[in-house]
Each structure stands twice: as C-alpha cells, then as structure tokens.
Image 1: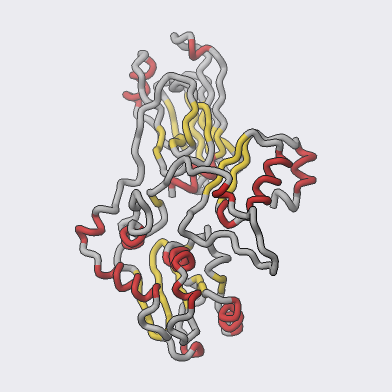
Image 2: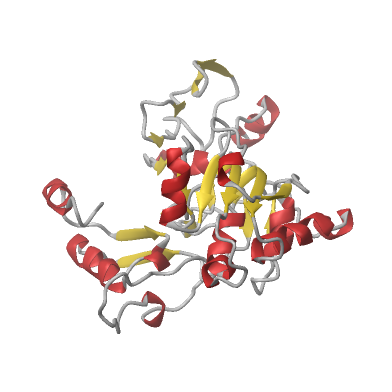
Length: 351
C-alpha cells in the first residue's frame, strides 16, 4: 500500500523515523528496502514468523537477493499469543526454541472429517471462514457459495471459526504436507477448527489427533495470564509498545497516595510484541475526585473535578492523551508533557 500510494504519503510529509513491516518475511527484500528509502527512515522494524509461508517467487526467473533474513538479524523472539488456543500453543511449542504460551484456555477444539464428495460438504457458511491449499479448490468452493481464501492469502488474519478443506485424494502431494502452510492454517482460529480431507493421515490430520491427545497437565504448561503489570520508573527511557499503557482507572486511595508523593506505578501491560517504541514520561499525578462515564460502547471519558486532568478514549480520537495538572508539588511535573500513543494497536492486543 505504501509503495502503490507513495505519492500521497510523500506529499503529506515524506520523512518517517521508523517503518514497520508486518508479515515482513512474505515480502521481497527489495520491497522493504525501497519503502525505507522512500520514507527516508532511520530504522525499520520487521515482524514475521520464520515457520510460516515465506516470500514465494511466482516468476520464471531465478532470484538471488529476495530473502530479507540474509540482510538482518533476529533481535527478539516472541513466544506468547493472545489469539491461539491452548491446544495450538502446546502443538506449536515443538517448532519454536522458546516454546509457546497463550492466554486462551480453549482446548480440544479441533475436529477432522472424512470428505469423499465436495458436494456433500456441510459447513455453516455464515459462521465459518473456509481455507484451502489451492486456487482450484478455492474456485470449486466459491461456486458452492462459501467464503473462501487460500491459506497463503489468509496469513496474518484471524477469526473465531476456521474450516480447512482439502479435495485432492493423492496421499503424498507435497503442498498438503508443507509445514509452513499447515502452521498458518492451524493458527488462524480463536475458538474452533475443522479439517475436511479425503486423506486420513496427512499432516493436518496428524496434528489434530495430537492436539486432542494432550492431557490437562500438558496444556497447563502453555497457559499464561493475559497480562503482567511491571513497574514504571521515573526515567525518560525507551520502552517497547509491548509494554503499552493499559486502559485502567485507579481507586481514590491509590490516587491519594500519588498526590502525597508516593511513587504509584503507571499501569503498563507487558505483551509479547515489539512493534515500535515510545518514550514514556514519569508517572502522571491525578486528582483524588474523578468520575467515569461510558457512552455508546467503546466511547468513554474520565474527568477530574479538582484539576485540569483529562483522560480521553473515544472513537474520534486517534490517540490517548494524558495531561498533567497545573498545580503540583513536584518540579518535574510542572513541565507540560503529552503522551500520544496510537490506541488502535493497544486495543487490538488487549482483546
């Protein structure tokens, strides 16, 4: 999108400190470097999974400089998921050196079905997203009225209910035993996974059988609490977005302690992502009396009757804004500081 619409982005500013690439390993290295050059970026942050589907050359030419991993090094390995089920985390731990954990307690949610005739396929068209290995299979199922994507097309996406369909009856067909395709397929669902195949012992069938065989003790090893609160220091240091601000309010007693000069930690959630960095300032002191109102689902506003503090979280505002009270005993707090953090990514990771 950035490369296609580069003129629009260049006219709006033209210089960006950091460029973030999601699913970076699916891209040609030239795309990444060209985007960085156009943005005059000082740094690039690449996010991807070495076990999922990489860049695929669809031309007849041999490529030499396409793998971005040959031009960079891995800075951090993320091994906690906020989407994958407990069963998936247990299975995926075999493919990652640090294992895998999740905050989802859903388990034994996978099923396999023998499929001999595609016309007899019975999937809820409104509830399930259907994934296939081949474009030919996609066309077949679209004719039957299903919402279908190839596994490759759906990489990086997610939904509650996934159904994967295989139509080929050739047991040893290579694509259906591709580890990268199978990993993408088995990690797209949040609640249920169904696999329809005429072959009973292919890779996905074996994985589903293995996932359903895990004991509760096996699964418990891969279950972790949803968030972890870490203290905030009064230093102007760079902290990854993975330790992003939580949407929380404090009790009056906690706020009173802050007023008295006690170091109440600013709530920060430690998530397993390093999408970008922000400079977080010392804890913001807040007045004792406050009110909270919630309107229209996501829209909420917290106002303070004793100071100028305001906390906004609305659909209209693209960021969270914190304002310091004008009167305070601390000299550090007399400076006017604003923290602007794009809340869409925060909200998405707190779900």
